[in-house]
Length: 585
Image 1 (cartoon, rainbow, N blue to C red):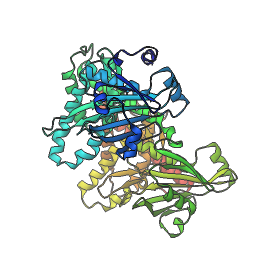
Image 2 (image 1 turned 135 degrees about the vertical axis):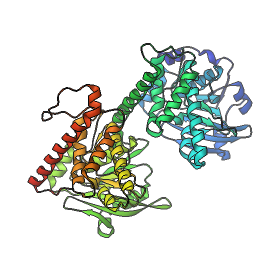
Image 3 (image 1 turned 30 degrees about the vertical axis):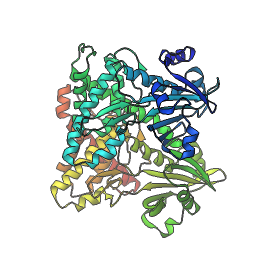
Image 4 (image 1 turned 135 degrees about the horizontal axis):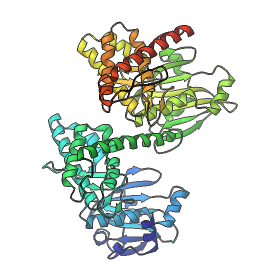
């Protein structure tokens, strides 16, 4: 921020050689390449819009990106807006975002770092902050790296995918090594802020975009390099294999020329440190984002229609939402019932969304009396908890039906009946049903193994389900598990071993009701859960008496304590259900 303030107070040295043009109430700074592209009169955005050559590529409240086809070539225009007092205050003490990104792009290119080519930036012809524009030349065959990974790469033959994937990991490691040796730190280096060009020789080239906050200084030491690599690794730790991340790491080390040698730590220990710090960084990120599911932002919108208030994802069309809220109880009269009890009802329905019809699931929770509505004023309702928890699982890259909308009927200012609309998992059935349907033992063991690994991943990512019975784990036709019924779910930065054991014990009670699952299979399930790195300490409480164990012995024999703890907790759960007259499931 101090460096940006100095840019505001003094003429930035890299402004030398720019042409200044005033037009339509704006002041434009043009690079020599920009003068060649737009002429001495500068950019004419209004004229381009009138000519119909402007296409919206991306839009949100803070900025809109346009693609413009000019006789001199394709350019991109980023329109930066001031969308609140905080943004206005930032513009008072620093240059506009477009100005910062323009200057940073020029510096990076001068240092030999691939970045977008800046042609011009413009702002209001006034001393006060206002909207600003950045114009860059398009890299003809470049696409966002995230778009390439998610849409283009999966369309290639499997063998070609694997070869390119290995090459991408190597080239990306070399690219970030070059950045860090040049003293460049991108504060948000996820794949959406990288462009990739894939020429016919299949040797990819990367370039940086979204450069307004890029830091440029001395070559990065290990501490600064690790902090920036954490941000790179956050996206890939959820979506790529350990082998790919290891390939990235070794390519990065080979290409770094200005990284001091490790003191008291091997490169393997540095890699382990990076993975652990990335995991902790992701946990903090997820925890900080959970409040966004209860407000309006680029993903979620708040609505109030008639006597109903709630939230919906922005992809859910207004007309479909209005049609649903006009008669929210109608599907429960004519739809296909999946569950019905005195507390809640679940029904399957078809929803028109755009030109397609989507199969969804609508859950309704009624009110026993006015007191329930009063409690919902001072607590998070069951439906709202399920809504937040569903998005929290999606944010952690864990499988669960995506919540589409949640709303309550309001009476006398009190939130009463609640409704939750989610996507439907196609051809799904409960884990208990899937186990009974398995005809081959290998298929059955593979299914249990996938569930065990999912639960370990869930716990490692800071999630405790708290009602982990077999009926709340859906299995699709491919044998992939999905978590449902999230009202009791809790999230945190760490799930202690005893809380993990309580979750597993709840599922173990369900397994005890299935004769197909033998004690040996239940033990195999536990060993699969524990086998995932990093190793877990044993669960301890006042009723668990364990003598001190060396780390090596705990690693070898800790599963015995886990097995005894699960057996005790499972027996307690069964006895408690019998005392309360509840069905054991």
